[in-house]
Every structure is written in C-alpha cells, then in structure tokens.
Image (cartoon, rainbow, N blue to C red; front, side, top):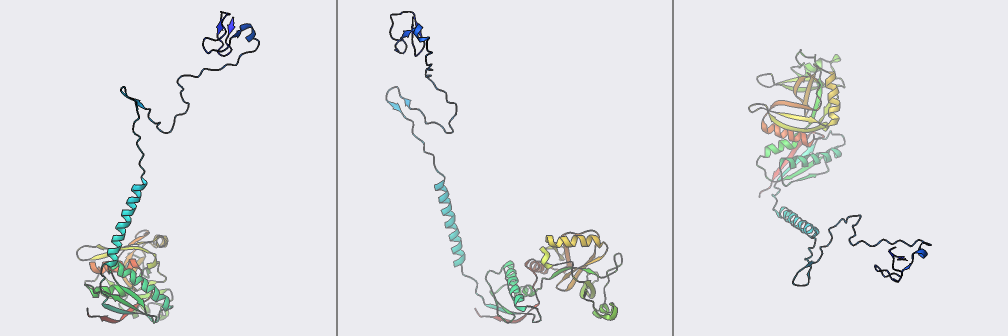
Length: 346
C-alpha cells in the first residue's frame, strides 16, 4: 500500500509512484507510520474575514458580455473645507461692508456744548470727575445719542459736545439727575400707626433729644401722595441705608393706571442678601424709598421681601423712563450743576 505524505491519501496499487491529487511522491504506508506526516490544511476557495472593514470596499469590475470588463466610475468624496472657506469669506466681506458704511456715514455735527461742574466740596474730586464722565457716557448712549464727546477739563468741570436733539431740556435734566437710590428704615411707630412725618425740618430736628441730629439719622423731605396735592413734609430715616444704588440690578418704568407711572426695580444678589433678612426681622416697620436724598414713597413691611420693589411718586411716562435709565446707568458720585451752554451756528 502506498501513502501520500502530503494529503495522507492511501492507494492500494503499489505500482503508483505519484499522488493522483497533488503529485507528491508516494511512500510505503508501513514506512510512513514511523514518523507522523506534517498536516497541511488545504486553502479554502472562499475565505471569510473575521473582522469587517470600516469602509466600503471598492466595487468589483463589471463584465460586459460583449466586451472587456467595465469598471464603475470612482465617486470622489467632496470636502467641506472649500465651502467653509467660501462662507467665511462672504461673512468677512459682509462685515467689512457694514463697518465701512458705519464708519463712512456722516456723523451729526457737534454744535451743542454744555459745561458741568462737580460739587467743589466732593472728597477726591478728581476721582469723582472720572466716574461722572463714565456715567454720562453710559446715559447718553442709552438715551440714543449717536455722536458725542464727554471731556474732563481738569478743574472739576466736564464739557459735553453734543449734536442738536429734539428735546434738549429733557436731555439736560437726564444728564444732571443724580440717580442715587436707597432703601432706608423710616423712624416711626410701627403699623397700624401712620408713618411719622413732620410739617417742617425744624420740627423733625426738634424731635431728637437735645435738638441735634444724631450721626445715625437723616432728616429728608417727603412729598405725601395721600394729599390731594403734593404737600412737602419731612421724615427721619436711619443711617446707613439698608441697600443703595450700587446694589441695583435693573429698573424699568411701568404703568400704574392712567397717566401715572411707577418704577419697578430689582436688586443684585448682594442687595437681596441684606434686604431679605432685614425685612423678615422688621415686619410692620416702615421702609422709605429714597431717591436723590428725597423720600419718594413709604410703605410698611407686610412680609419678607428679597430682591424687588417699586418707586411710586406721581411719575409721568417720560419722567419714569428717564429716572429708570438714570438708575440703570448708575448714580452720579457727587452733585453736578450746569455752568455754561453754547450752541454753534450750523
């Protein structure tokens, strides 16, 4: 018997010398058993991969029955980079055009010149002037003045170069408005007793022991809204104020019915952190809304208040909007007055 050492096939015909399958020289089977042959697996006709490819393999050529193989056209994957570059270029071009139009647009001539003076008694007047310049720029910008200059003069004075506006008196009032807001405790018996007020400043001062105002008190004017016509009275409020204008977050004018408006305001977190605990501990006490050192409204504390309130004071829509604007842009650090006004001829 013969044995193929390659494929292990056995042949009974001893006359055969070569394997009929692979042509390997045959050996006697008895001799092959002495040493086991090396086993070689035949290569399969169709190999199945154990890992799939992450991309789509190229299509195999398509054979046409009438001619040579036809290879499908290769579709190139388009890159987004050229599109992104084109979009960026268009955006840059559009921005440049808008900027050029804005820069080249003729500005209103600065024909109106106002000179303001910061109160000479102000401590650190130089710093107060710088802060006043910043606040005035914010107010003019918020008011919608498109072209202006605010120039410190170095002697406590500030020059404003402005274009002509439709309502110059309104703008002058806005410029000089203090914007100083405080929420202060009114010294008075608690509710339901009415808030304590005095007909004159002298009467308020006389209420103190010794007839002198203590360091932790202030005597301020107050216009009583309960009267048919506003009557000027006086009130005593506590120092320091519970919160002040630096802790104001926002202020907006709101209608109160008819031609009457009020100002709705909200406090920053630092103000709310102080106002909330104080109102919780002072139920039925009176609270005054003090604006530019004048008590504008008084109310008693019914419950804890955290970060919102109202200023009532017989405001028109215009005066409420202007005051809200002044409050949002910050209080002037010191009183200012107008000392000169010049209008150039166009």
